[in-house]
Image (cartoon, rainbow, N blue to C red; front, side, top):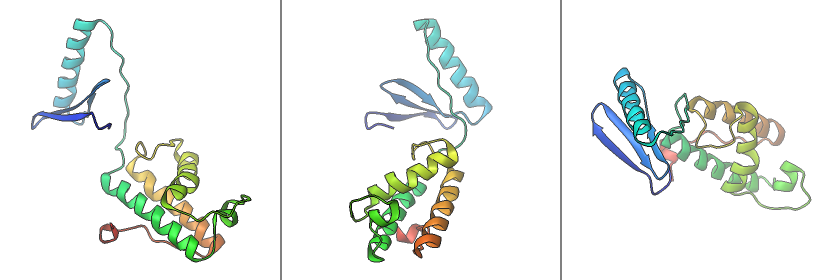
Length: 157
């Protein structure tokens, strides 16, 4: 969600994200489905034009996102400490030390895209994270002897 988006909780049974581009409903019960359909009908009756985009599955959690960034940081440090710069790992002509963002963009994202057809880490589903990690860990540890465990809550910093 962008910074301008806000969450509005109408009751214990209903919630909706309000954004500059409209509303995003999380529908996970029959009651929420009925509320969303009612709001869609009302909006259509008022504007006579609606664009609806649906997404199924559960998006990655905030904890998974934090763990991804921590993992990328830890892998970058481990590769650098082991003497494996980007030239050695990715076969480029320039020797550049790793950092969290380079790991995310040049290692994590391409593997995620290949396995899930989704390049956005924010749109990845919860189950995707362990699959992508396992693939990367298997490759990096097998090829370079560098193993970085998936971060746990205690590794947050």
